[in-house]
Image 1 (cartoon, rainbow, N blue to C red):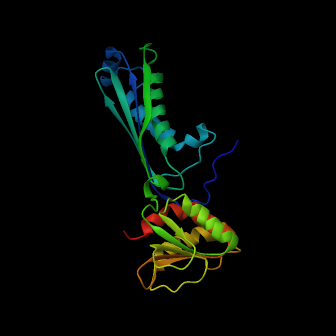
Image 2: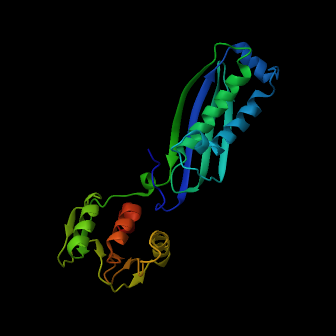
Image 3: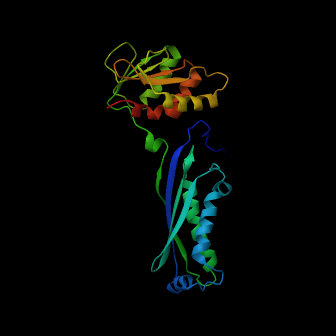
Length: 257
């Protein structure tokens, strides 16, 4: 048993929303609204508990990464026969906040149950679910459909790059000189008319954190004289693998339509 290794993923903006509800007797709902529950203010306690639950998710779930987030909120809506709970978590991290959002809702509803169980023995927690999430590969990734890719590499590196490109579904992968391509990936040095310095800096910071003693040139991205997107990757198996595993899904976003 082990957690998923996300150490090489770049931190990106992520959000998650979750929902759940608890059904109660009408007289219980009335007691909550009128502040007559013996244990105190149910709604305020539930909101606070949900926020604390989100903060302690990794302590409750053994395979959940301990994540930091910059914002969490829990909202409660009192209906005729139930209380609905909504959570929202936002931050910059290497993996998503689904479990934090779901835990926030779950703990909020369990707090209502705990505070009201002495006056209502028929409560039922229902339909805890993720409403939406954003960030990471699922949002930022894009295939290479409709694009042709020229690869300049040899031997093992050529095979490695080609195998990873096939997962992005390009219209074709060329290994001999041609002008009929939209993206060039090369382990040979390139002459670029324009370099994307900011993008290269982010990628190379990640690569350096993984291989501080071996990365030299890392990755260089830009446009050639014909305006075609070019990616130079240092001729190293570990650098090529790390690039495609962490940034390969973004290749389609760098190619002009």
